[in-house]
Length: 349
Image 1: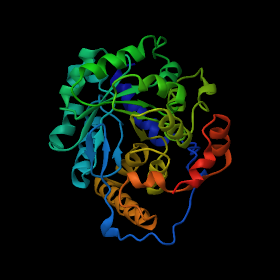
Image 2: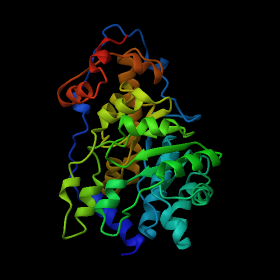
Image 3: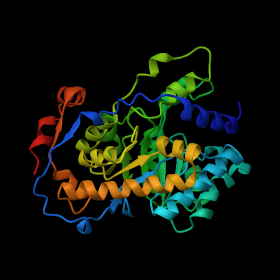
């Protein structure tokens, strides 16, 4: 099967596949502040990631490209929505365009539609330094995501089976590129053990990419008869992965994986992230309701966050890391047995 056809299959299955929703965000309870001493006019949504200033603490995360005209149209719409709302945008893996130059336009359309916006490139951990440079130059990227997708590859019939040297390649790319490098998981979560290793490199940020959103194991299993169902429940819930990552790294932490609501973004920030990436839910709105409705939804998210930050007395995104939250249920248990003292979140001030 061609890469282009596989890209189209991924979009189809991502839209139809039922997500588990087991992100852990439902087990994060915000402690209400009755005297916030704050006005909505005081609040700033700006956040910094790898030295880049984001106008909002959420962005359109990597989705597609490399699947012909359909993916080009999707990326063009996402770019226009990002431009109108001022948020950052990442393209999907650019390896298709590196291996097939005819697919380059499906990614370049993003910069064409949004010439002054913050655009993140995307490449796999198998990439060489020269391929990473090519991906960044292709779309004049402001940052480059390197995605980790071991489980997807293993679940994929035509996927990779060897993952040796990934950390060394990531380190070389981050040393050589003149733009920030973000390492992201693709729905199975970054553990503290992985975050410690990544922290030793010169990357700028780690995207936890937790379990609970688009499940690429399930998507790949839908494409084959002999299914590897054991991978469908594999992964670290997004909320737990954010805490595991933030606890051991001095890099900026991003959140993704099953983030559907503005309150999910807020809880990501409360747990230690600097920004959150949203993919599946925005793609569904775009394909089912259109570009105009996606723009409206992004603006609703921005308004919602201002309201919630006002209620908590927070002027900046960084202030949210001092707000007490109570962690309950499986999330509390996970973090407790992993040694991350979840009770400390409830005593912050």
